[in-house]
Length: 230
Length: 230
DNA sequence: TCCGGTCGTTGCGCAAGTGCAATGATCGTG
DNA sequence: CACGATCATTGCACTTGCGCAACGACCGGA
Image 1: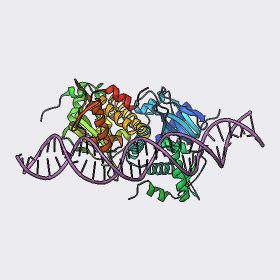
Image 2: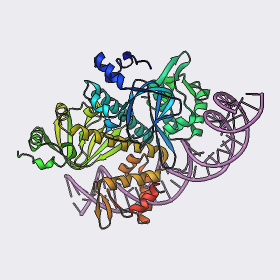
Image 3: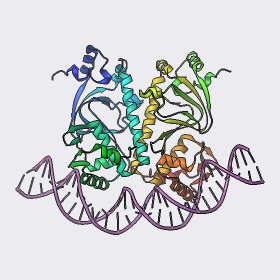
């Protein structure tokens, strides 16, 4: 069992103001975990015993309704904390976290949260994260309440392309596997409608898509479709 | 100018663990404000210079889209803090706060937030508030994404009745004025559809409504309609 | 008391998007 | 390499709920 390197944490906002010694301490308390695609890191409603930092991969935050419909709230990119129930004054997880692609994360027992909170910059930065997520969800409500399906799907693709896209010569590729069904769960539609839209956009040269892969080839045109035009 | 009474704050969660002397200090820093129905306490995107505690009335948190559609995110009842941008690591307000009915609130300059954060229980409790609001908005996303209009309107009425209803012999009355248009803004529909639903429910004896007033007379039947059935 | 503004209701036609169903493509596994 | 599972596509019929339009009720102010 080899030691984790300090450079893993030092550039990340929650830890950036900490001394190497402090980072060392924090790392020594961490338990790394590997989560194959599709596995849950934790489940909605379960007691929040650990919180996590995503090192690699992507985490999908999902809520499931009583009827079994699932809604994808957001995707978390590497470098961010997640499962931070204590920052919300909760002792259970508010949603389920699933690995969207194979993921590596560090985990700490929840009691350490309150220790870390004493480090300079740690709480400030994590609350900023919470604020950003709240803002994002808020934007989703607005979107769902006011925009048509086509615009919502366009927005969802753009959001993913911006937050977790990789530039290739063909355009911006969304780096984790995503099915039509996932997109439907993010936008409150059906697989069918998403499929039809993507087909149409593919014909129009706006996106290129393969099984579980989407590349946005003409972001500007998607922006127009999303209704953010002005 | 008379002094505010300490009993105003002492029973409220963020302050409940403070000594009378500490509460006295906090009160001395506060500026009370009166907001007639319909006036804005602060606007979306403006620099967050103050944060507030609602003493009486109701605050409606609203977001307005570029196209001018407005979405009502939530209602804040008396006793809660609002405009707490710093708790989200922000320096501008994320939404507009409008008085849903005549309201009285205490305001403090934002720099005091960081002083208050030192008081025992203050931050814990406010983060709990943030967590609860996040949970509520999250639930709204789920609702908007999975439920039909009728169920969403039923849920919205129930939520308001639960959180800010007053029991009367006729049923549960929502205590602040609410128009069909407001309900439409909460559920992402149109005035028309809301009006039709309320008319139907009135005929069925589930609600009673007057201009800007709604009384839920048969909550259980509304619960069934909301799809929370099992 | 009249008048303008806000709020609410209802009928009708239409379009967006769903539900259903059938088919096909692709992947991983034994 | 064959099979089952997952993922994707597409046509068609149907329903929900929106847009439009017109009207009516109620409230507050001059």
